[in-house]
Amino acid sequence: FTGKTGSELLTEQIKKFKVYEYQHVPIVVKESVSVYDAISTMFLEDVGTLFVVDDKACLTGVLSRKDLLRASIGKQDLNAVPVHIIMTRMPNITVCRKEDLLLDVAQNLINKQIDGIPVVKDTASGLEVVGRITKTTITKAFVELITDEHI
Ligand code: ADP
Image 1 (tube, rainbow, N blue to C red):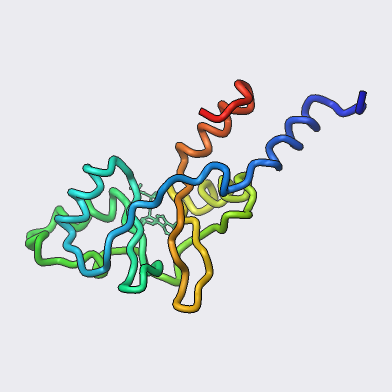
Image 2: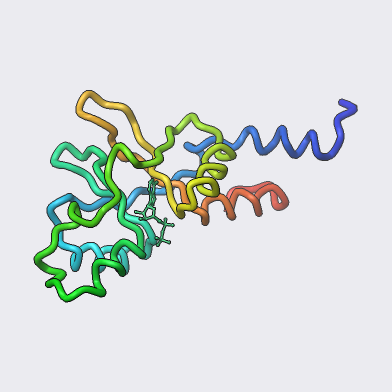
């Protein structure tokens, strides 16, 4: 018997959750694609956040549902506007790395009021996007605390 309280055990368990165990495949688009194509990709891939990359597959921006909605309510031709015009861009993007604690990423989702965070790998040409953590990821990890298995 370790003498630990239930809440101590729970804290211990939560601090074992690492990004790499939970990350999903990132959905990325190139900077040059149109707003129209980004909207299509968001529907086809069934995600709420797209990550924007350059020719070297390095992170340059983020597109949320509201970014695309905002761009759609004007009169401009959505086929003619490239996403790099409307995206949130580096260096203002919150990222995480595979060894980070899921708890720290969850805190960032709340503090920054965002739905998703890209998992990146540092390379010579920039930050390569290798995964994504979203509010859904955190919900699944939360349920797992009770069921104790990956779902
Ligand atoms: P929505 O706007 O659809 O509610 P979010 O809350 O995720 O979705 O996004 C809010 C704003 O924050 C958007 O302008 C989006 O581009 C930006 N954003 C989303 N994810 C990130 C991130 N990881 N880092 C910085 N900004 C982000």
